[in-house]
Length: 257
Figure (cartoon, rainbow, N blue to C red):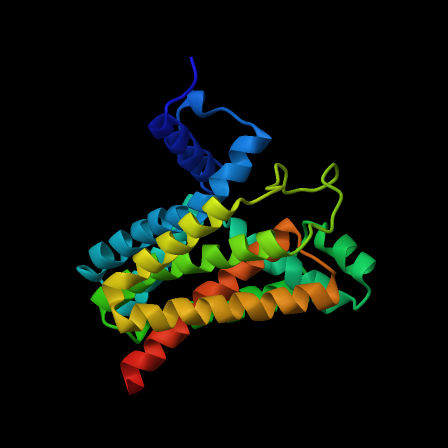
């Protein structure tokens, strides 16, 4: 018997959770290329889940420790639930693009699982920036920013996948399985989810989401220029860049708005 619409959408959502987190999902979710392609619409919703876990840890930890300690623990929580998936992509991308201007050589460097100087510097800068910016906010605003930032930054990845070609052989990719096509419906659902996740912050959230999209557009342009497309690692970097852009914009508006 064919799945009903609710079952199909639940399966797609759980497929996205299965791919991007270490959270357990039922065995009936299964694996298929079509399912993964259709699950792209829920990537920002996975961001809501991950950001929500980080926000819960932030609020709970703040009852016991100072804000910077609570922020660090919230960041650790998000990395544990995602297995550091996006941070690893950022480090590999920084090593590849920093190590060579030749696209083929850059892609070869990115396939090396060992972290290099550029990757280490990128991770230190991004994690330090998140700590500093989130610590500068009130805990309630920071908690909402975690949810909105994780959702909006994943929308950036969806937009890149929809508008650039994949530039690595799928048979040798370390990021299999891969999204191979994104429908207009999936794009609309992803956009709506990201914007809704930012609405609790009001105008601050709209500004943050706009900054994340601008950052994704800038990153897309860099990828097209340097590689002619994207890889799985580049999408991880896109998420980290978009997340930082969201936090920075929110903090700037709260300070000067």
